[in-house]
Length: 630
Image 1: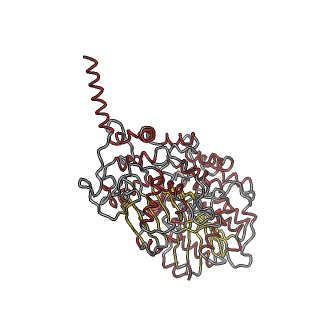
Image 2: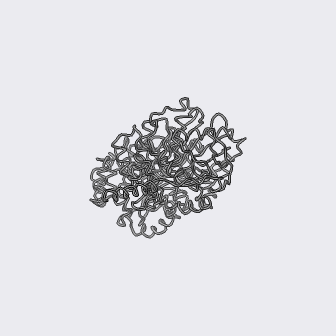
Image 3: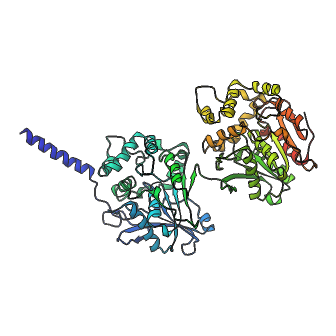
């Protein structure tokens, strides 16, 4: 009797289990019980129908034709948000489509990584895109791009992977790195990905069950969004509200479940063993990823280009302003203000300070437009390497700073000569220009420039006085930056000891004059405050400190007057109550370099550049000349 009861219970349990893990039949679009078909579709070679959406320039006359693969829990309407005007201006046609089982595209019971590529090829041929086209994939759509690079590389004009999901079981990942990235995920996602890979039959149950925390991505858990994402979510929600329901309207099994099982399943090839599809440079492959992506670990994306050097890797936040390409292939972001470049009498390159960005072109911001217009002044400020939206420079040095300025000036056609101005940490860029490109300068201004305590030209007693004048915590910080540069990142992130006062904005480094200015400075910088370090503190402030306080290959006090003929001037402005940079060392520089016009400002602190009247005074002196004022 007991045996029969146990048997009945086991059969019942098996029945419940089978029902739990078995998805309901799909609701096929266009069928009597399914959602309606609302857009155009093409018939594939296997007789399935694929829904698509077109945007941009007319297909027949477009110069560039792009097939866009959407991400997880998305549809064909989740296309690139480039404006219609931009697309038409550049002759770009974008074709996005519902991947199999999503939106209004028929499910594919035989869906695989390989089938993704042939869906793209079938679609492109049905719409007569020609022998070659571009392909782009976002997030889970990344495996469609990898599939195209493997199975139809001869059809591609170029490819872009945008925050692509990675498969932790690709063989080329070092086990230690793969394990590190795997454990970096939320615990609930670690379990979810294990299910998708090792027990795909349970994926439907795992996504729908309520007993354990499920996949955070499927649930749109707020923990997977970083602050930058969080700011965008209201706009994304508003944009998607009219079509969001379409993504899984045929059932989650045919959309989300098959997608997860294919993406995290066992692939029949390793993407890191692919060959360059454009060996002659006739096309390119790009991989874009955010360094604070909380869904896909950035450490795995960084590894991929080391195995596939033909992939152009782009990491970090989006580009919001114009950039120029330097001679070494890096990009430099810039900001222009004043009269139009082509009609300006005076062209000035402005260099921001520590923890700043191109938007900190405070001279341009503080000076009235009428003043710039009256004097015919054009100002271009730029993000120094690794700051804001400028690419990091792994070989950054004092010398490279000057050539970045020269490259920028030439790219913008500023002419054979231009002015350069640098504030605070941007001062060493000006010293670099005076050393390496003096023939390109019409004039130069150093505004509260940071000095290096290891310049040989300083007398030891004066140097000791200036060094000991600082806060003790800053004395230790400078020793780290100079003698142990490899520890600079740790020193600026550790909490065991008092850190450098400047990154911490310690109130003690501001004199009363600075303190009065701070509310206005905070208000002015609020819209772009986060931009300076957005690519990470290592490539921005850490490299800046290591270069600025490292060992230089020249001593500024050995420089010769670049304007011995009187056709230009060099100015140094400093507050005599600056509590960041000791004024006694600046005064000494002027005695060693009498051709530097020294302007000592009584009662003024470090933030003198944020004063509107001083900004005008600095520009007037640089452009029209002025005597020393002490």
